[in-house]
Length: 448
Image (cartoon, rainbow, N blue to C red; front, side, top):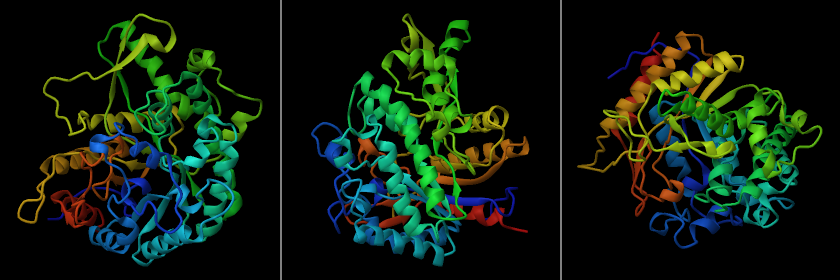
């Protein structure tokens, strides 16, 4: 079945993954330890004690996965490089065997007519650097810049689309403030440093990428969910704006506008955010596109307390709404809201939806996976993108999260996001109904 949609013929249709979630081969060919290796092997940190040692075994099955992408008809693939696979200690010696894997992957993608979109950092910091302070150390900017230069020099002749950091607000908060993700810290003082140093690392990487190769398109990958007040009271509306500053504007504004939001800076200043003269100029590098990862909206309620404590993000359930296996509300209008915001508040930059999708309870039945919930979700969210484009949003492409079922961080292998089902015991791949839906949608979008 061909699905009729009205997108430009040069619109990018892709799928996305991340290194630690799919590659496996954790101890192969000189790869170093990452913070997620350490965290996931720490008892009690992940569901069932799951870890990424094998995952989808993409490291050995990448040719099969490229063939699956070709069958889908995607013309772009967003993946991340494992920093400790390329530089086991994070700096210094480059591991040629690890780097060679990405050489082969990129060459295979290009041979299949698939454009690589490369993310430098999707949360797997070398453990050796964490032991030197990680993102709490100001030196992270130089470490990350060094790594970015290595990748640009090695792959920049063939890879032209780069994203330095995936969702800096997510890994900063969950890794260093709530402790739910690696490195598992719950430290306001550490977070005060991390929330600024991730920005410096972004700027250093952009500079290193542009110095390392010519003709690159460099962007971001931010998750900036709409913040909705639980009620329409002035107090809840103010709390939603306050929380938006903490989770969204703090990470968006310096990169895109060259300033930190004044209201959030006032709240975070007691944490000792180590901003120095010249830092914002280093952070605010010219970008070619903005990547937006989107899944759902967030709800915020006012509560007694000073500063950020006066705003509480809560698991508010909407009567009659549908939810994914992650417990996230399916709210396609949120993607339209997000794209409208970047059109009206940030100068309507070129945007790629760098992640969008949903987890469902998928099972293989008679060799098939009938994931009607995901099909409906994708149809509705892509329609929301289409509406936003008709309203003037400058959207250039869309990437489904994810190509494969994978290691879903602290949830282990309990949540399935993939277009393709993975049997983790055997590695067997089974395309789901959503894969066929996406294939037909892409084919329909390319019809004259």
